Length: 332
Image: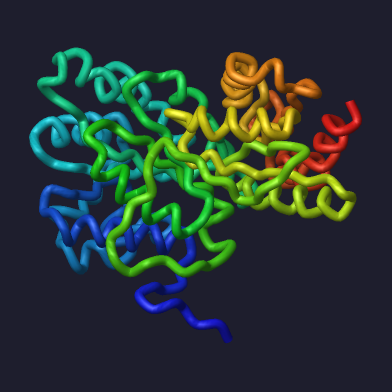
């Protein structure tokens, strides 16, 4: 059996989130966690399990079922020296808090000419594929990538989850930290026990390639890697980029890869219309149009709410759909 490297431990993504929270709670008394069931119950996915026992109910705070109240309270705390980490039980529950995020959290720095900032992290599980009820599986990340003043971060693996969460808590401005539910316990990897950060705004090349660029994030990284490996067996070299940060995007990395391959497939599970794919295509058009050998292809969810269980797998992009798009850009 493989053992963890010295100074690391094998964690799932949700365990890495817990470890990141614990690291920052120990470092600063100004870090607090609040949300529905985050305390005594340890969170609906156990992301905050054990934290109330260690840090007490003044820092790990169970709130009423009131998302707008959670975020409104967090904004006030953040403007007054705290670094709150507010949990939305699911991203689809964020809608009552949308006004607080849009009209206050994202604008305080601008509104006060930099006199105040809002160092707030909003954690939210998101994405389909776990057989959750209606609204629980929504992928509406694009609503927030059109909101100047807030960063949007999506880890796809345990190492990035801890490093990006710590970076988000240390950031002086609000960060929406999206956790793909399908990745919570899908795998383990070595994660440093000590504090470290992964830079916000920097993507990562998960697999190098020469013929096609795959741009993706979250739970779709695994499906994209499977498709890339399938294409590799057919002689097609695919570069897979995990965006990691959706706003701000790593424009330089994206342009460099697209200009190298000349062909691009974008993969996300959110609906196609108005999704992040639209922004990525505009970016490619602005930076790399003359390098393109084929139109950009998108493999996405459909322009419907996430369907119930029997149709959920048909809604989600999978390796077969991604492989088909790869062949389409190759054979254009």
